Image (cartoon, rainbow, N blue to C red; front, side, top):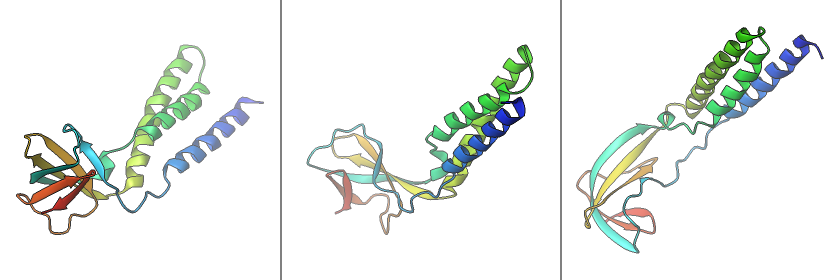
Length: 152
């Protein structure tokens, strides 16, 4: 194989893998404890202490960044020779990581979730991420049962 053919194969592979990162996200956000400092008991009570809107794109997994870094390094390795090749490999890895992370963040779009902070009666605080919160407000009394919040 010539250098041109190798570069073409790597470019097509990179495009295919980055496209895999750009698939549509799921439409609903399931229950996700953001901070589980308090051990879960059968039933706990507390009050909603805070409700924040958090951009889902701020929570990238890093998988696409790693994939982008590997692909960028492979493509960068095809450029130059000697120490120039090493520099191109490093720059390709960095550029690929940035591009991969950006693609994943864009894939998640501007979706926002509500981060609910609950001050439990035992003094600990837990947080939950929900797609919607209906009429839940700061100060509401809630029950935590089986990992789910219920307004009392």
